[in-house]
Length: 494
Image 1 (tube, rainbow, N blue to C red):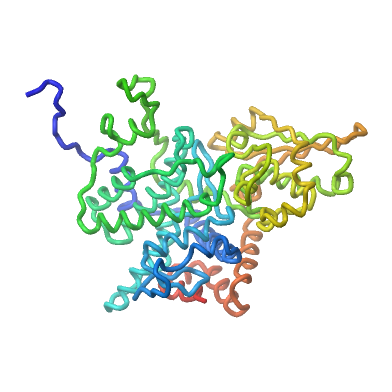
Image 2: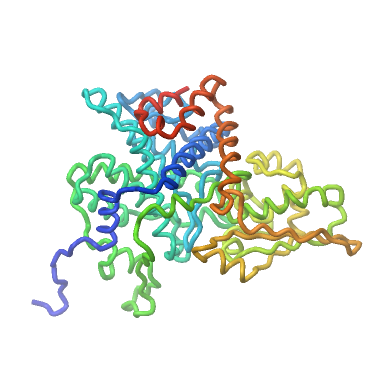
């Protein structure tokens, strides 16, 4: 036998996969804060999806691949009349939820939007429930949906705390795929072995590059990438439920595993040096921490690192709106992550480019006193050349304290400050906003505004009577938990 031959001893499943599987199968959620926040998250996420249906660039992606197809006992897509297989329904729900960059956010070493997982969760829960009812069984209830949301949030968010996928060029939707795979397999009734298999396929699967989120290639794929990820998760969970074997060493296998191939500093011609090898860090066990601390986007459909910049700009608007031609420079002080992700100079090619530009998201509210999804559209941008002129006057610098407190667990601030200087030597006050209105530290202030946001988004799609029925149900936590999933989804059918 050759001394260099691989020893074909099949390993046990990687520890992380076992931790995720055991959490999903056995953890009992006892946090009232998590349950209540999940209800608000459900409302906000669906509202964001309904608002996105106003935009043809989003709706062109929706519906069956074969026009006119209606799937018996299929999953519904809120705000539409579509009844689709759960894989395509997950894609569609995930797409509308993420399209306007208005749903919840998690910021750590990696960032992302855990409510993206609702695409897979709702699609599977609706389809399974309708099939169960057809077979004389009881449907799933919305309490199960809320539980799946809490657990998906937790998996995605805890994995993001100290593991930066963006630094190795991978998009954060890998975590949507992993989290959605875990909870949709659980909804399907997976055994531990089936759940482990599903998770292993989520990690071994092809992962998205971040190319479409960054200049000069930023584009609209970032608006449907999470729908694609949660949809793929449903497919992988289904494959595992059919008895497909897993890949137990998917993360740790030397040379061929996720860590060596995608998460380490690789050298194709040499073995990895110890300092170049990287594995995931899990700083705390899975529980309900992420849902309890999730960040809501209340005021602005904008990339979250710019939320406080937009808020500061709105505050300064009355002081600058009549002096725009007299501005000499604008000092925008921010944190390292914002500079790395969304600070841009030069021409912005499309709406997706604009809603990921820190300077654009500050310039618009400085000029107009507000920032809405319509402000990113080509027509608006072309009609207002002063936006780019104001952008060109911005000087962006990092405040090391802002960068440090962005990562501190007891703070997790997302700070920005703006000061405007005029040609005559005068200036505005320096307005600093360290915690956006959707932050947990401002939760009491934000919930009434979140509910108003939901109410407004409902009204873009449904008549008043339907809006009131949905609002009433979502505002009554015990009734919502007991509602069968199909009955809930019925309310959102056009």
